[in-house]
Length: 357
Length: 85
Image (tube, rainbow over all chains, first blue to last red; front, top):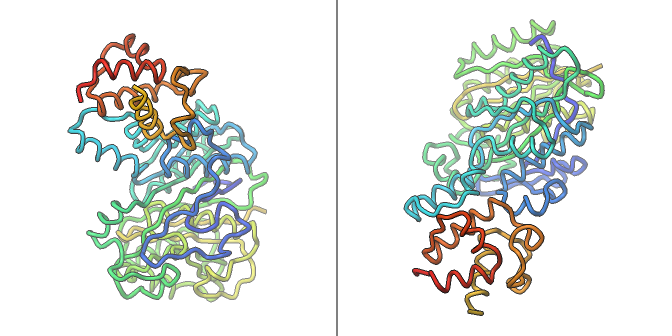
């Protein structure tokens, strides 16, 4: 990745108090039924009463996170809106499908159909920011957000002047979606407290989660705390392939294993991916602090957005919240952070994020 | 007729998710679109679906639809004359 993605702002709506950063993890939000739903902010601050009455929870989450990110970055109209989502607005889709069945495909309301499409959040954001530029949605399961970021990177690499993009990802958890995924062993059979997720790594499955995470990105480092320098997606790698990919990524950026201050690891507590996680942790330098985030976000296809939001804030806070530390390393600085997300399907995404000096 | 109008207002509030609004807040003769309730074109589609689902009335002529959906009063009058349920 030749063009770094400078992160000017990050906004997250998640099960934790991420929208109001000052109260992040204070208190820690947890659940005992394997489902972590978002803590809702005041959506009316960003969405008009006329528009909000028609919106599902997912739309409100996505639009508010996107608008808040732009507001923090001081960008009114972005040069592009690029989003990744694996499922779009599940509630709207469920409502529309139920109506189709119950009403025998007659007298269907338009709202459920219009807003169940994957790109409805992009459309709303474009209208609200009066952006008529590039607008794209990536729908690729666990790689959705990463492909969105890759597209943003390519766009900024081609830019001949300063550009400001809005990029992000969102996915939603519903009761029915949980039941369907539970049937394919996505979630744990035993009910656990979400905060203890990593203590349950000996059983299969994870806990459900949801969230919307948006980032204002630029090729201009001014006002950025950090930048994504490398990004890789690995489909069902072996442990050796994962280790090799990390080593190559570090080498390409002039770094060694010892230079990694933090490994932000998306460990989901599923015993089926321990063959990746255990060697990954064992292979870390003693300098590196290993942190984990899925006990706070839950597992979903774009959960790496929560991890990226957290990584960005490590640089702005200049500290690692003790609650996210899995294994303390000896490094006292936060310069190089590797975000490593492992999905239920044993796919892995890597992002090397470094401090902007 | 009065009972029908109250029922219709309740259905409009539920169908369009007019949060915080009660049937008594909607004037029988106030325009549904523009200055009155401030509804838009998607709402007009929702109201047409409401008539079809609850009263078996199918509006196929857009010009006729505009007249029917002028206010709660015009909707109620049309329902009284044409309801198939």
